[in-house]
Image 1 (cartoon, rainbow, N blue to C red):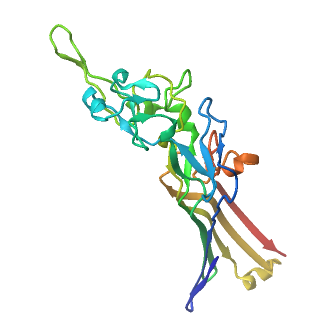
Image 2: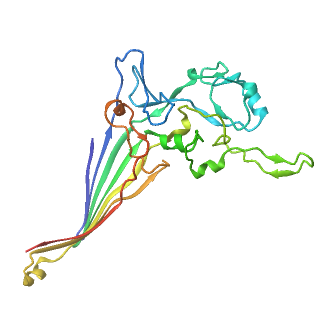
Image 3: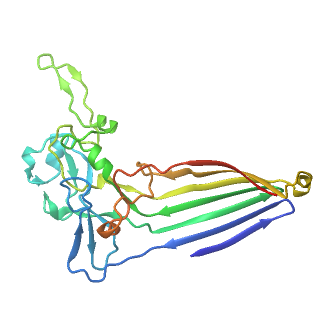
Amino acid sequence: MSLGAIIISNRKITWNINANIGFNRSKAIDIGDELSLAPGVVNGIGTSAIIRNGQPLGQWYGYQTNGIYQSPAEIKASGLTAINGIAISAVRPGTRKFIDQNGDHVIDANDRTVLGQGQPVYTGGITNSLRYKNFNCSFVLQYSHGNKIYNANRAVLETGRDTHNATAARENSWKPSLYDMTTGALVEAGNPNNKYRMAGSPEENLMLSDWIENGSFIRLSDVTVSYQFNAKKLAPIGVTGLMVFASAKNCWISTKYSGYDPEVNTRQGGFGDLMPSLDYASYPRSRVFSLGMRAQF
């Protein structure tokens, strides 16, 4: 949908603004009970997206988490009896907290829920052209709002899974304080961090809300500045027109997404089209600078 054009002009400056916005809505009509989808990017995780009748496509599906257990008292106060097959009596501090969606005091596959939608609520752009005498500046702002990105890179590099490498963020894993058994003196302070569970914990092959991020952004995607020389002054040298310009693409972006680029979808084609906003091993978007000249003889 075009929002129309605005032209602001006086004797020296002309500013032309064009804006548009697009809304994308989808709804599954009749697919049976439901359709479970697995991107196949992280071994063992399995179902990561789901399609249900009457609901939109591209919904991420898994466990909602709420930090890390810091103490035995906190584990006992949870009221749970088991977490993914482990009796609560065997759960230790440094274990991830899960939200009991159905209230049965057991964390299992029945507690999985929709974690967000891969499709944006709306997208659009704003094109600006500003002219002053022989100078012209044009720039394009692009925006997207409301989608959730499954950052599968973090699902591999921040969970401490088997023999995978890890990012430096894993240094903030939970760890206990250590004391001298004889004197009781503090030897090493712990790290009661609420983001990463204890290093060396059992492997978790689960789709978690931890890996779902806000994909909204606004991008300055293109800027071009040009100067048009006076044709009359160039006529003596046989030039009828001369313009020089400088341009830049992918200049700047504002987003809360932690990956390279929020405008991402690395599983295209087939079922991948039903799981938009999946980021796994995506390549950074290039930033391009150009200088040029156009001459007419």
